[in-house]
Amino acid sequence: MIRFALLIVILLTGLVAGPMLAGQKGYVLIALDHWTIEMSVISLGLTLLFGIVAFLLLEWLVKRLLTLLTGSRRWLGGWSERKRQKAFTRGLVALEEANYQEAEKQLSRVDSAAFNGLDLLASAQAAAKRKQWDKARELWMQARAFPASELAATLHLVKLEIQQQQAAEALQLLEALSEKHQQHPRVALLWAKALAHAGRWHELQDRLKGWKKTLGLEKYDFWMRQAAQGVFAEIASKEGANQLKLNWQGLPRAKRQDPAHQAAYAEQLMEQGMHQDAEQVLVEGQKQGPHPLLLPLFKKLRSSNPVAAMRKLEEWLKKDEQNAELLSALGHLAKHTRDFSLAEKALTKALSIRSSQDDLLALAEIKEAQQDNKQALALYKQSLQLNP
View 1 (cartoon, helix red, strand yellow):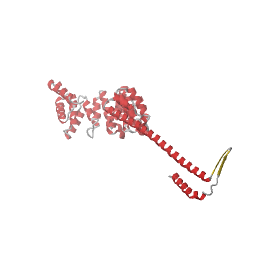
View 2 (view 1 turned 90 degrees about the horizontal axis):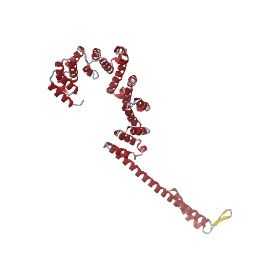
View 3 (view 1 turned 30 degrees about the vertical axis):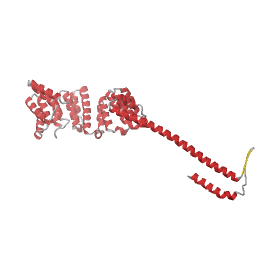
View 4 (view 1 turned 45 degrees about the horizontal axis):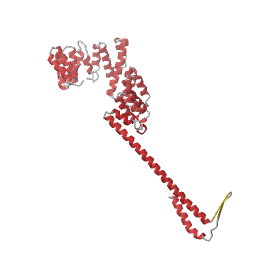
């Protein structure tokens, strides 16, 4: 626009100054070695004017050509991008349709950089579905190079290593994650699994202290119980039951009052055949009422006369007669003491409130012990109709 305005000014100047100089042509001499150019001032002006016009025209033609070439590249690039996007979409659809071979074929046509490694994640999933673990591992390793897919790829790799009993490799992958990613709930859960598979129970206990909020109370209690069971089992197998009891007594008060530790300790006592000691732990650990981690363990007690446990269950049932879990625990406990009348009554009432495969099997065993084979068989069949 500026050049066009200047051209107009030059033309207007020429129109005004031309007639004034018509009678005074003058001349211009340009000498270059043996070469000379001689022309009038008006000729020089016209030459410059035509030169400027020619330059502007050439500039316009060059810009137009470049625009056409750039547009072609953009069109070709857009066509390639649309082709890759189409292949990516087809690959995902094939993956959802369980056509894993087609999914891999389509996703192999995608530029991973354009999709931040998402195509690699999908391809690895297709390979894993086909049990091609080495190929899946390679694709997940490639996906880790992209920040957007690094965490997801690492989680898949960790799951694969745990599945293949390679806990040490799984832990190395987790430790290589950034501090931010290490706070992810899924990372904490897989880390707990890897430590459990590695038998590193004390380290699991230490890490769980910082994962309580991340995992949530239910998962925290589960893994704390697993860790405590591992520690107690290790002590019992290496040093014996008496050392196990001494170790429990030497624990901090907070751990001895923790339901997860109480449940793990009680189970290990029962593993060692010390059911009376386990009964004491379960009863004293539930002074404030039944606890979901401890109550089911009443069913495993094999004491010949579990007076304290029976009394505690009956005490709770007086306040909540329709509690199926309490009735179930009482029924199983009574069955182990061969009080079949009480066991049958409690289990039948529990089953009237909700279905339970364990209770049906326990009731079938009672009928079988009472030589009521017809009823026992019917109960066994009924139990098979329920999911375990």
